[in-house]
Image (cartoon, helix red, strand yellow):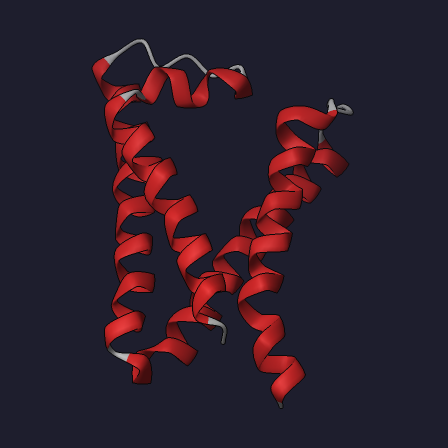
Length: 124
């Protein structure tokens, strides 16, 4: 697993997480969600904010504890593919949607998952 791939994906999650903690309403606005109540902002801060920062922290920990890397990288890659699958399922169930934000982020999630696992597959 390439260290640079882990760093790039960790930085993505850290950025998303910090943005979710600081500006929850702005983070979900492109998805036509409105975080205008304490309950909705709490949910965004938990799912996008706290979860994103925690994911970044676990990925970052693999830089100093390389024995953790295979399991953490596989787990994060599967999480990302699960997010992308949720978007595909939504597309099959719901009406068609524009490229941004749904398909854009689906692509980001698939690419990030592949960036994490391809070095392992290629080296195997």
